Length: 158
Image (tube, rainbow, N blue to C red; front, side, top):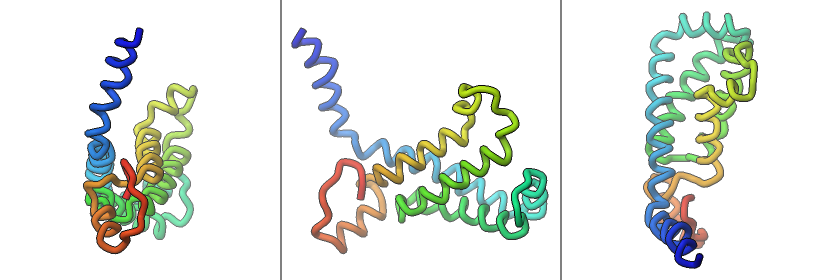
């Protein structure tokens, strides 16, 4: 039995320990890229997006549409490069909750449907980045390394 524990638990944990930098980088690239271009597209078709927001019942669409579009663009860019990652994750999570409630809630007929929305996956990725941090391949990590010699070492965060 010890050989099975060694193979399936210890070996996989050892291999994973060398790749802890990869998961936050991969998640940041995925969500950063998606939201950078999503925000860019929304900024370039604001009148249509304002009407969409109005149709979804979002209040003050003339104000919130450019704000959300800009937040998606800047949030995507910042997450992509790993700058202010934990901070930027919070408004991105809020945007996902609002998107689900305003544009998708009528389609929810089960937990399976709700959990199948890509917005839920993005929410979870933003939450994970907000908790775990951007990882060592990020501007956050470089900034903290340069300006704080007393920060505790971490496998994930900066």
